[in-house]
Every structure is written in C-alpha cells, then in structure tokens.
Image (cartoon, rainbow, N blue to C red; front, side, top):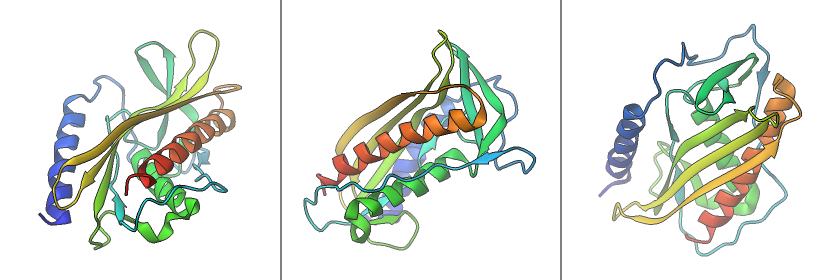
Length: 206
C-alpha cells in the first residue's frame, strides 16, 4: 500500500471522528488570523537529544482536532465544560498547522533532521506519525489558571497500515494570568514539554 493511500485512509477516518465529536454552540471560529488582534507563535524545543533506534524515515501528518481547536483563536475554559476564547490574542496560524510545523522542528532540533519529513512532500517513509489534539488551552477555573496540552499520537507502518505504537502525551503549566502574553507563554512551555516527549518516544521506535 502506498503512503498516500495509507495516509488518506487513516487521516480520513480520524477526520470523520473529529467532525462527529465537534462541539456545538461555540460561536464563530476563525480559520485564519485577524490583523487587529495581537498574534503569538509557538516555539520548538531545542538543546535536547532523541535516541536513534535505526535509520527509518517518518513523516508527520497534520493533526486532527475538534472544530473548537481547529482555529487561530486561543481556547479558555472559565468553568468545567465551558469554552470561550481570548479576546486579545491569537495564534500565528491555525493551531493544527502550527503544531505540525513545530513538531517537525522539534524532531530536527533533536538531531533527527535526516529521518523526519512532512506528509505531502513526496517522500517514501517507513512510518507515519498521526496525532489528535485533545486539549490545547487555558483552564481558568478554581482560581488557578493553567495551560493544558494533551495529544494522542500513533505511529503507523506505511507498508502495513498497522499501528505499531500509540501513546497519549500531556503537560500542565501554571499561567500567571489569562492575558495574551502570559497565557501564550504558558501554552508554549506546555507544548514544548509535549514535543520533547513525543520526539523521544517516537525516535526510540523507528
């Protein structure tokens, strides 16, 4: 089975599941950025090493996400089960695209630049890394705002189409406030923790 067929089949299933679970009544979502709103970026962690198991090539697919996260807007949970967005901040791109770009950079920074690529670049990989963004925002209830990031990751064999490894990664970092700079700084720190965990875990398996 070719990579393109395998990826379309697996990513299609994940997309259908994400769409079926999409939250309703969350207000309008931005598909891109608003130039009038302060814009923030995620960083990719550096100065860390990932173990090398072999010489396999892995490609990073675009993450799936519920509609509430598939936007440039920054999620805040003021109460359990309640979703809103920061008025004074946005990401530099839609969150799934931004997460994918920084995860690839994290692999490169962890000395795996020659063994990682982006899905759709015409590569012939040994493995595909698929991810689903479960949580990526500020939980601001109980008087203790925290940046929470949770991602489900699967490594799929390109030729077999079988899942060879799966794991859920999460991180929680205190946020000094829910203002744009402080909230995004905490989310950046939490995502860096998750990126390092994913890179080290995946690198030990291909």
